[in-house]
Image 1 (cartoon, rainbow, N blue to C red):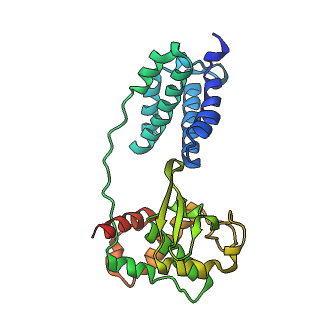
Image 2: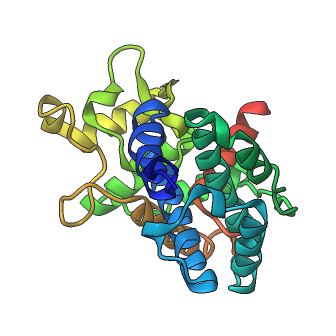
Length: 271
């Protein structure tokens, strides 16, 4: 079997060329694809006794992929996670079919493996009075409370994802007479979002002289002065929601997350 049909050579080109350079996918998607392929290789090595360095594309049939998905389900992975793994594998084989026409038939069968059926959960949102109570919770007399307030207000104003807020830089902000923010979203797509005057004012107050500093500096920092992470934002939102529920009982039955805030923004704009 020629080296060109060893799966490893295609995996390397797929992850380093297609995923990063050609498609410019987000870091989270890149990691998801790497994890899916790593798990597939580990499964084949354990189930079929084939070392990944010797594994050929021809061996990874649709049946092998279906067995892999069944294995993931038995390992208590959710249907959504199983579908994420399958999407990555489908994408890999689509790339392979473009590289080697002789493998189109095999790739077509792998791409035809159906996604698992999932129940789409109903996304909750906060009523306006609940959002007001949520935003009123941070102690803005303290430096950390001020940061918390501005971050939460930004999520609500821009309908931003946690990852988008975490990677926001000073250079992404224009806090002039018609303030707006440049957001790098999913699929590396850029969107421009107007900022409310009050949001712009609080951002100016939070950043102060940092507005005159490096444009690549992060806007939102953690207690150690490092850029806040997506996980840190999720933790902050959950902590503030728990505190806010003591003043707003209707929040006690709701699981508040950055995505719920994002959904609340959309719902409020439609009213």
